[in-house]
Figure (cartoon, helix red, strand yellow):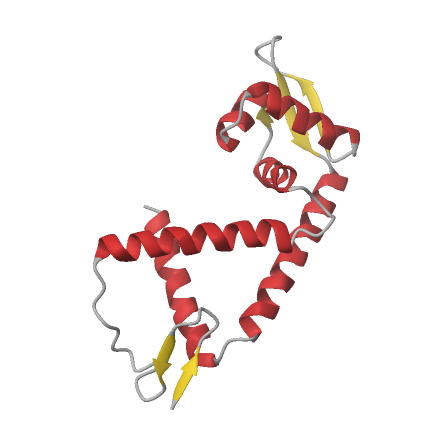
Length: 161
């Protein structure tokens, strides 16, 4: 019996989940994973964020949840120009999700922090994204979910080095 997976790739149920994957060249796998990860990331940002936060706002609030940062640090982390980050932070501040204080050691800079309201909206957006992804994962069979669980472990290990 053959089954078509969500990706459109056919598999033979007799070998599905048997733990004997076909050999894949690292270069080919790297290219396929890069595309899949980028698409998944983009989809999570757009589909799952709803009207709660724009992707850049979500990312900045996530960084600030780890600790206060200067505009320059945020800009480097997001790979945008400082003026662009200033605009993002201004929108977040206007919404009451961030606050700015003078830098303690450098009067030319400000330190941006997340507020309680910012933490709340970030948690709501995270819950929204998690629920969307959980619904999509629920559409897969148990064998495919086990494969993705193992892939998640491997990716986290690779990225923590």
